Amino acid sequence: MCGSCRRHIAQARYASTATAQATIESPPISQVSPDEPAPSSLQQPRIVVKAGVVVSRPPLITPDPHPFETAFYLYQRRLNERLVLPFTQYFHYKRGTPAFEHWRTRRRERGGVAARDLGKYNAYAKDNWNDEALVGDKSADQQHIVEQLLDEEGRQSEFLGDNANESDTKLAGLKRATDADRENDQKSLERNLSRTLYLLVRTKDKSQAEDMTRAWTFPSGDVDGKEGLKEAAQRVLATACGVNMNTWFVANHPIGHYSERPNVENKSESTSATGTSTTSEIDAEKTFFMKARIFSGQADLKENTFELEEFKWLTKEEIEKHVTPGYWQGIKNMLVEH
Image (cartoon, rainbow, N blue to C red; front, side):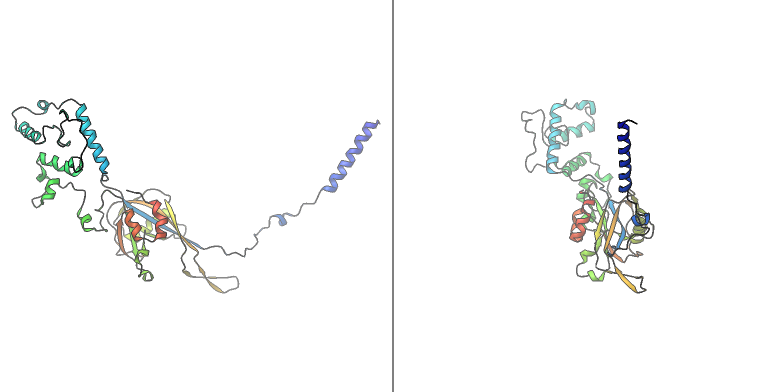
């Protein structure tokens, strides 16, 4: 045997011996991953999950325009009047007919302007460059335009009864403010037609009698068993506000949640390992809100099981005045501005 072979065999023996000495016996499986976790000295928090409903009535009419918007739209109409071809009166009216004489009389009252929503502005006069509405000019006011159009048509009485007053006759019933707005009836859905209204309820909690604003919340209740949030919200809305509301839930997932830490002991007793009964405390209440829309009907609290005594349909600004600051901080991002 050559010398290189003997050196190779000796190195292999030394390597195998060192490997055998360095090998450590692995511990049993029971020492690495025990069957049961070690008992913890910290008590798990007790959280109560609730389901709430944010019921809203969407706007029924367009929002009130800003004064800048009305001035801009009037400017656009007057600019268009300067750029288009002149109004061909004989194409629309036959000479000598009552309709032609009526239109020509009204046009003379407007200072020769063909359009009825431009004010006294003549696009073909020498001062046609002066097309901006001046301060105090009602030519851009939407109500003024509606009154003028209805007055020229002369058909207001067709849409109203015989007992209509003068203000109703001018607008032919096309008013943006209702009787509920004038009376500030916050239980009516016929108010603030250009805004979104939300349903809030108030409980009969005697401990909050001094500050009743603390009782105003969205309808909410506990989740029973394995009930889903949407099913729980539907049940809460039906039992709290009655079944006379035709509502539609927008989605199957909540739009937000509100956490509260009440200082109230849970009345249910639990038995410990030593056989003594103890009373646990609720560490937190988490209310998950589902979004819903109302199409028709009205809330009815006569047969509710949540001890509710009053409800209101409020805008976002009005809700801030009715609820607590903490509750407002938790729900304000769920509400739309208009």
